[in-house]
Image (cartoon, rainbow, N blue to C red):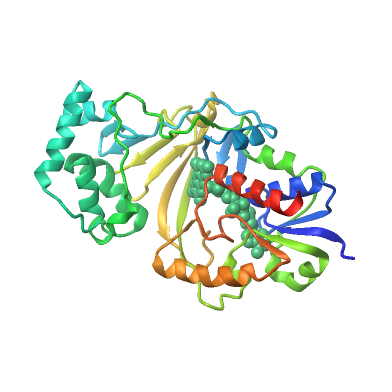
Length: 367
Ligand code: FAD
């Protein structure tokens, strides 16, 4: 008889919900987390009364009522709607592309004029089979929008020229002939009042959590403690990188506390000019309509992943997907380990996707 029913590696969204649901059903759980805090990438830290999204801006959105109802038990959400602004040199544009964007770009007034302008721009280029991301984007929205709002941002994000990126990266570019500048199409959206970390504190209440513990540092000891493991770390690391390393894109954050109450007037401003090195600036207080005297901003840079960096975005190209498939075969053969979450499943998941995933997993495992 082992001491715990479940050892949960990682106190992010997947691990914390699993632990919460297992504990609710009388299972004894131990959560270990290598960082010095819970919450994974959703973690927020209160600095000068402002809830700072330490691993990048997190906006909760979903159309799944079950997921929305589920998360509501851990926090009340505010009415925040993501309406980013794009800055190209000294011009400001509304995102996603909508009537405000088109009016600023060309002075057009009606939806018909905007549609005609975009069609005219697309026709001018005469691209029938886009050979790369640049041609794909131009064939969808025309040259002006591409040059000012897509090119520089995308090149910074990927660290490569748009002409060297495959066309399939952009399948469609939403164009709205309305004044709706809500970035998401989902039914429900908001930011948890008081920040995300409180959600995790409530989920993990009464559950044993050890922070600053890397599973791999004392793997055998931790494995011996529990009947089953829920592993939310990197799948290739779990299997000793035996087939090679999976690749990621990483981010660099540059933070600044400013002695002014309002820096940019919006939570998210994208810098779409290729000459500005960062991709966007987040002003955290605007996620919660903050009125503090100071403000806290984060410049976000996209970067190549190197040893020691945070693995933020999986690069799901052919090479990596094939590699992951090999690890997945090994993972499926391990009946006493559940591999869950963005690192173990090597897939980008929004928070609502993770909640759906873990609830499905709980249903299979615990009901
Ligand atoms: P994580 O949050 O990464 O949790 C995994 C945990 O496991 C981490 O805390 C890690 O430290 C720990 N761990 C790993 N290895 C070990 C080990 N060996 N030993 C011990 N602990 C270990 N989603 C949205 O819905 N809206 C957004 O606006 C949004 N913005 C995002 C912005 C950025 C920059 C990023 C990167 C993601 C964003 N997401 C957003 C996605 C969101 O962060 C994820 O859906 C969610 O965090 C995934 O939870 P997880 O538990 O799978 O992974």
